[in-house]
Image (cartoon, rainbow, N blue to C red; front, side, top):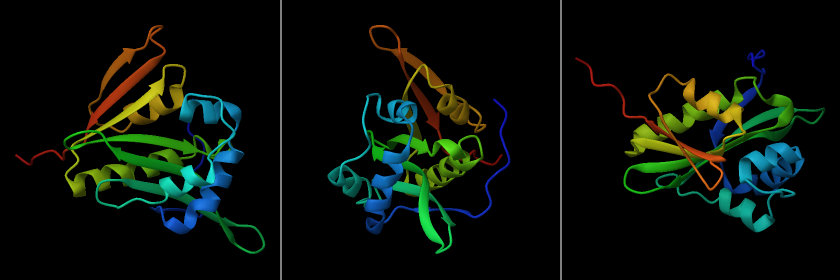
Length: 174
């Protein structure tokens, strides 16, 4: 699917503890399909405990980034994208991402991924992994379009899941 015009006014930044209520609102506002692709289950969104956990990163081993948009008459900042990184073994991190339905395919996921890759490189993480449903071509396309080598492994009884592994070590100059 073709990429649409990027959205003006989007800011990518590390997640903060103060984002918990807005992050809960963000996930509650996703379509059923988007929440299913993100969590692999039918859910209404995040509980306040889950939201607080996502917003309580140490920025050294666990990280999160949000895409925010200041809009409306009071310039209320709202979250329109979220990416989290969790430790997944030596020098590895698992990534998960969601973008608000009305903002998908508008470069927000790419900008969140770019922030994640920069964080990984600066903290000694050399491999990112993402587990996804094989029926989710959006995230698969986003990750494989980053210009980095990737490996794909399908799994599950019906092969409905896949893991993409992306090495993020910067190329060594010749």
